[in-house]
Length: 182
Image 1 (cartoon, rainbow, N blue to C red):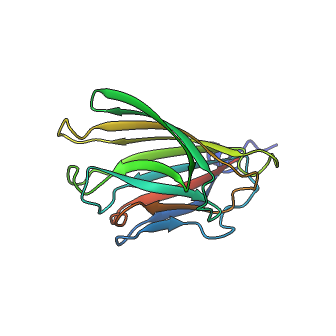
Image 2 (image 1 turned 90 degrees about the horizontal axis):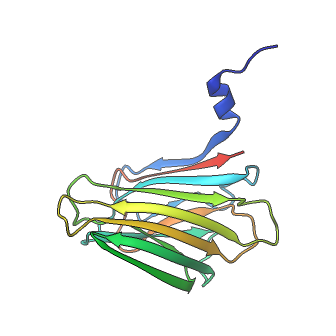
């Protein structure tokens, strides 16, 4: 009997479903319709984003299956510098995820992680997801971390994921990778 190597074991558990690093400023990352197969247990999105919007705190709109209807709810906990706050936004057209804009320090991109458990199975269940992101700067007025709990009010399997710049475009070098986890 052969013992599988660690790499073979990982490849049986994690698969890259989508990966794109921008070579020019672009407004949207999109897997395309049916770009996400329903053969995994969970999805993980890792992103490295910055927009061309002239602000420190910009945003990306996360949508599933091309749905821009008012089917997204989110609860956000945010620490801006030393001020902790929270908000709840119901019946939105996307999950809003904060990222760096053009006004933060040069060469800074926001790290973003989104966890989507049980994205395909579980017909009859809405799709919940969590996100963590930060915007940092050497200027103490532009430091923020967000933790987001969100839900897409749909029992459909997620087969398409898009991230759209809320204003402007994503800057060259921005990157999105989507993993399927067994």
